[in-house]
Image (cartoon, rainbow over all chains, first blue to last red; front, side):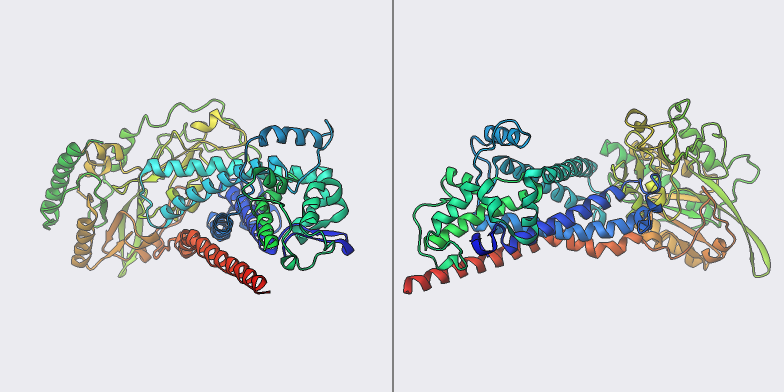
Amino acid sequence: MSEKILAEKNLIVRHRTIELVEHWAIAISGLLLLVTGIFELPVAKRYYIIEVPGLGWSADFITSLYIHYAAALVFTVAGIFHLVYHGLRGEYGLIPRKGDLGASVVVIKSLFGFGKEPPMHKYLPEQRLAYVGMAVIMIMLIVSGLVKTYKNIYAPDMSLPVVLTATWAHNIFFILFFLAFLAHMGAIALRPNWPMVRGIFTGRVRLDYARHRHSLWVEEIEKAEPHLPDVTEPEDTPAPSAVNDENNPDSTLAQTPDTGSHGEQMDHGTRGQNNSEDEKERHT
Amino acid sequence: MKSPDKSQISRRSFLQITAGAAALTGLALPQTAKAAAGERLSTLIDLSLCDGCVGREIPACVSACKSINKNKIPAVADPIPEPWPRKAIEDWSQKRSVTDRLTPYNFIYVQKVTINDDSTQKTFFIPRRCMHCDNPPCATICPFSANHKNKNAAVVINQNQCFGGAKCRDVCPWEIPQRQSGVGIYLHVLPGFMGNGVMYKCDLCNERLEQGQLPGCIEACPRQALLIGPKEVIEKEADSRAAKMKGYIYGKEENGGTATLYVSPVSFEKLNAAMVEKPGEPDMQTNIKRRMKKTDPLGKAVLASPVLGLAAAGVLGWFSKRQESLKEEKKDSV
């Protein structure tokens, strides 16, 4: 289901099913990777984690490795899928563009009560920046993890400089991933972002919230489907005039921003992209 | 490492040892044997030859090892920082003279085992040290890659990178690495909360190997009970000796294979039954499986995961685009 307004239900569709699946596959596997990555350090016995009911296995490095591998499988498939799938579809809405840095400062300040929150599009400019940051972290974790996995199975005597580079890259980006996760949780904790949380579970957010905070985004959808306030089949609507042109930076910016939450960030790539996709449909 | 030196001296050293072994046992070793640069090595410990250096205060192999490594461990912090919350300090700095078990200051010891074989008591002396596994879990699972398997088979802990978490000891079937608290890089990071010293074990005298010298224990053995050479040669030699004495080999299959082959005229089940496992005194359980082997299939799936992701994206991407074009065609026809 693409973006559309469900006026009777006071909802607006924000995420497609495939994006929700991508987000939660990465989120759950990423969390498991974080936990089992920590358990690959000799901390479970020292810090009495093994005494916690249900965590008796935490000091068994081989068990943790099983889970780490299983989660890495999902994480890597979902991450590569995300990049390639939306890349193939030409959905580049979340690639940062000129002016994002300055615009991000204004929006973040407004979140903390400094200045007025400007009219929002679907995503915030800082989300585009955060999205790229997370993508780099994930790519580095995946590449270094693959090297380590290859070493574990096929080449325990792999060149030491290669092993050390992969190991320390994995360790450093593990820390950055953990910090990014905390930032994500921090963004969710900000009250203005609370209404967005249901979106990442159901794909829909409240329409009145969207009108209030993401007025530019709602206007775009309404412009695109002027005769269908409660759109159920946007694909069949006649082509509207200019809405979001994915080749137009300004219009893509209009598709992007929002909660600053990391789960949302995972969607961003998809999300800005979705708009483009919707546009294609609407133009038909 | 200088390859020419290594190749040259290794060849000479190996031939020396093979000549000695041949003289003692009456066996001939392949004359082609040589340990060229980067060549995978293996070691052989013949229990029919080791007599524990009866009459010496300390067995020659142990004595040589201690001498070579006497200055390896730097000065220990005083006081040693107390780890938190589990206050487990392992300090052997005041017990450096211990030679009857593995310690951070003693990388090899000779285990004395007496068994009843065909109603007669027989005593065996078994030099015990790191087995230098072919795929050592201690190295592959080290979170900082401070422990590494070299091309020449030596599994070496870099004491400047090790935090002393003892993970390597936990995953070693023989619990070989030993910890010395109060030394190492952890003292400069968060000594109370992270790390607890440095792990030490036999490194097969890797530096000596790189300089074309034999490991100290092998060089010092007065009965040539310890040999080193190219892996294939040593394996053939072990097979040959075991066949001649109608004996047994230990280390060829254990933990997925190792670079240490014990040859014994009695079974290792019998020897192991007479052993009592204690910290620093490993037993010799047979058929030890490499636990990480069970994770290999899942690891291989991980290695294939980028291709899976690409394939899924390609198929779904193509499918979604096709759906779009079909819709467009439908609308055009309307």
